[in-house]
Image (cartoon, rainbow, N blue to C red; front, side, top):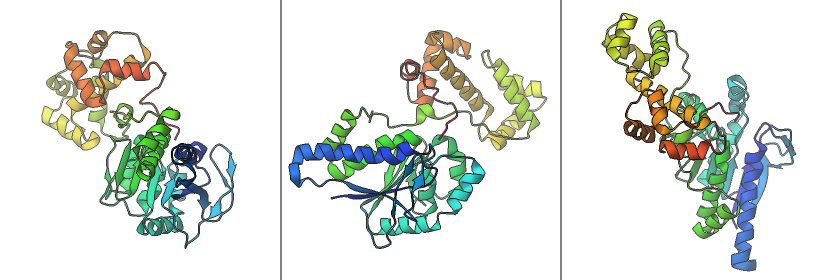
Length: 337
């Protein structure tokens, strides 16, 4: 009988907190049907340090059980927490030493630790992810890397799993994470039945289509600022780095060096990312053909454009449009997580 503790915090997302338990409940239903009264069902508790009620970010209040030092769980889930700004998030993380100590003790006693979205920061703060693979929500990548440089952060996968440490990307990925947990404790058939009955698309294994290629990096390098503006204005035409360098009255070598220093990429890579981001927007919001979009973002050869798009996004332009235009998703916009 797998016992799960669902950590509960003021300001956490109710969907992540309760949704994870909902999937365990659905798993229990399938287990009962297949195995009858002898089925080893999930048990779970919503727990907190104090045992007092918590208030989720949407105002929902939930009664919790106080964490017991001697209690042992097979699984501990850390939900996503609403990000209310860098300062508030920093204070929240600094207030978790007791939580981190408890998580470490549970893991050492054999528990799986699963963290979703911003909850991965709490798991990383335990030190258990140091030297191990992990993922997190894409729009806090830089903060995560800065805080936890010893973690081997990978942003492509939706889920990472190593040594009973299971991390998931942005908030809704708790759905896939819960299915993975069901698979680990109950086997693939039960996990598959849960996914099908709840319409959870388990084929979504990568975050790549959601990752922004152009991170908003604040800097004070005037040459790079001018170069970025020039590239944005001229990207649809034939762009040569020699022309850009001449426009800025610097050498190509200086231009490349300053781009790498400020943006950690070359001017050519920046141009490619700029074109792909523009193509993404057109695929999501327009009915232009792929050939037309290729020309509009600076590629005369549609096949070369399609090949580059697939390399960067993990999907062909047509597949990207089918997935994101049909449901009106702005795949690279700001998150509210």
